[in-house]
Length: 423
Image (cartoon, rainbow, N blue to C red; front, side, top):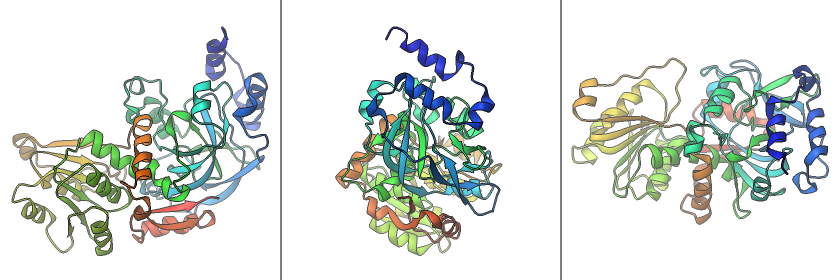
């Protein structure tokens, strides 16, 4: 045990000399060698398939292709999950359409549920006990490293390694992917954990236990849609009971914001969208008022509802320049405008500078939540029924119909969230 920390650091990157090309050509060789060094029988299933399937994005506006991969192998501090369900998110769609640059080819999909089937070699006992083999789990799309300057302060949503490695390079935090094609061993990048697949590897810090009372399919949205909504409400907006809130854009994340706002005790909860069917649904999951901004001036209507004041908090969940301005104009003096919608790369929003300065308007960006702190809370909200998962998920697709799911999302046919069932 004296040498354990040294061995772990050595294996992670610094002291072992393993030629990169060998790892790419034989992705499982190093893993199996480490397994023989220090893997207890309880840290993996006795038999896993040699191969698995995943949906690969190759170039913008081309269909995803389901291809065979070598079974991905976790490293220290990581878990292998047999995926049961993966949410259909606009962030993936932005990548598929080429609106947000990301390394390709890659496997998309980033809000998942599944079953733990393996721990990486030399994973600490505490993690193995927290996430035992066979445990039902949910994974957050922001996968905190647990070690950087932000993670050490509990700010998992700003994890340095997540942005430096995964979002910038499509890898995990040793600079390597875990995905290799079966036919030729070619490495494939990972958008978050690369969850639109039969199996995925993810850092254990981004995973939380899912009670067996909660269904795999509906619970997948806890890892992004609900996670993002909670992060916006709890950390950015800091919602208090009695606050008035406007949600602009009632998609998967926006509709989740409605339920979270209700759970936090908001008074007025105003849903703004251009589709009547989404607004009708919004009334059933927390909205006290709805506004179709194609038919009415949303800013004027919000002020009318709030007695001419504007709302305490407005949340923009679309990522469009026009709704960015709408969000900042909807809040009262001293109010908070929270931006959570991702936009096409290079998009610029406008703001009335004088009003911002004179009336002390706060404009806050919010991306996801804090996995280690927030994900267990979201599971409890769902388990208690305070957050109704069934109300949030409107469509389910088979794995083979992944392209249809994203086409429907692109065409605005999905109310709330859709989920792809993997197994």
